[in-house]
Length: 356
Image (cartoon, rainbow, N blue to C red; front, side):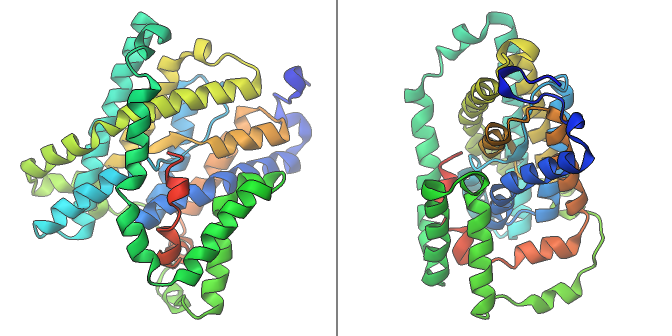
């Protein structure tokens, strides 16, 4: 067994039961934040889980199956979704159609990943990064949360008890939690507030009887592709202009995550397989997700925390977690159960939004 850097690089030698448990652990780590994005934006939960899984597998393929990273929903584009949605609704479009236009903007923004990957390959990481210092990208990250603050307060007013309970759980577990508890504060906040809401009669479980256990996770009417049936090119251009610059911040986030992962694992992923490959994997995953109505993807720090906790650095474990996410996406009943989470909780987590 390879245990360099006091870590395990081949999880198969642990046996199938432990291998499966490790995969489930990574699924839990990403789950809370990943489902929070569609709950806030109105995007489809099933499509989100599907393309979190598919996106992760694509990322692993492009990065030569070497990097133990999970790709979940990105918080960075929340401001873009909100802005485009508000603009489109003001022109008489429904929320779902408005989000389809926003997804076009995200798909266009994902193309910047490939441009950056080309520049990094041609000129090297250090030369390119000189043009993107923290003083430039930092304010963009801050602005993402600030643009959503008004909506957050408005929704929290529906039930302050649930909202405060949720944020107390998130903050408390983040500060005082130990082991896996410290890594999944958002998931615990979701579960805790959900249980309280159910006890207070705030959740209508009767809707679960209206949906099937198994079904397709993609609704073509809720995808960027559906816009092409009757496109408004002015709105398409506006969506791209509004969302495209956000990709600069997410690219910086990606590079930071790669540095964190390689520091945890003890391998130089920036050199091999190279940032150009990991960026292409992230960009391709985001492009496909946005085209089919799911949120943009990003590498998740929560799963890096799991790597550090378990010392199991085998990327195959992450791929197993991705497969679990794909399986869950084919259950409309499960997606409905998630969709019943009260809005007063989902909009209070601005501190987690600022994690980008």
